Image 1 (cartoon, rainbow, N blue to C red):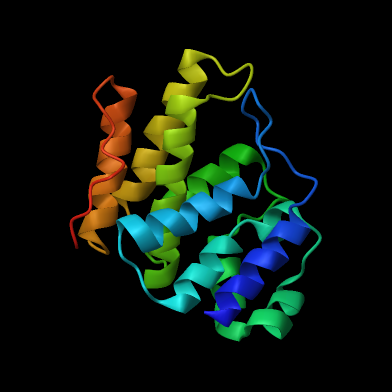
Image 2: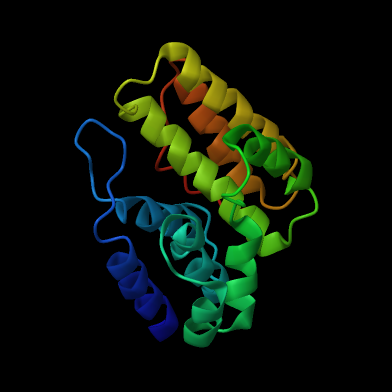
Length: 184
């Protein structure tokens, strides 16, 4: 538990000046917190290593944090998981998105859990408060891409997959079921 609290504090400090692209420009840290909430409270993931890596999942992409710093602070296993879920920012956005689809099925179980939870949170955010300036077509393209990624991750955690499917259905006008609490 201490490691998780330390990771939350670390992520809050590293992401302190970042904002989401929603109309309210909400603090970026809300996203990783939402991710661990989905994992722990909706999908009942109790593995602290997964939760620590989840709160840190965007830290390499979006801050000046290095993999070495993560390993020193949270251990090599956490650093390896975070590296695994991080995109190579030297590649174009389209290349990164395609690689996520291609590499998804070969991901470790912890990385798969984090990737599905990340997509759930992103879809929920897009459905509820889309980024300023995003067209309907761009939003739909994101939903389609997220589904292509998650389709390669299926079989790892039925409850997370159900939550993802519910988030997709919510995009089509069906009600969200945020409080679905079935163990999987």
